[in-house]
Image (cartoon, rainbow, N blue to C red; front, side, top):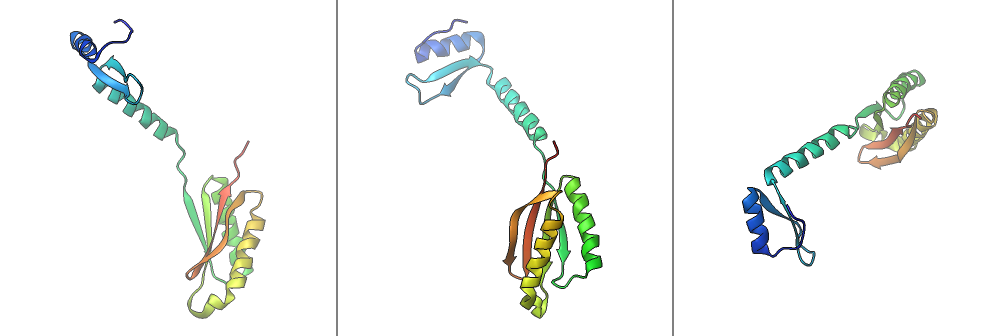
Length: 148
């Protein structure tokens, strides 16, 4: 096969002679760039590449830990241990304080609790999103620190 500039009828004839397809690579170029190739094989290779890239991509898991606005120290420490384990395993952590009924008046306690958790987990992860009140729950995200 010769590399060169051909008119459309000549390029189509060359592709037909070889039993291949004429594929337009860059339609906006002047003149448009085309390539003689097996189009089905090209699509197959492209799907194979995309699948390989998708397999290499890391899947992010999100683990949740729920607190009440007046969570006791023992319960807090118990949940903190679970949070450490989640972050060590490489999962993202979504910690939230759920306010039931009139407990919404303790939203400052909920924020203090989440900030305390963030400070205690400083060596395992960093805060991605500071505590934010959404409806009846105050949410905070912590991402694990990558190990070197």
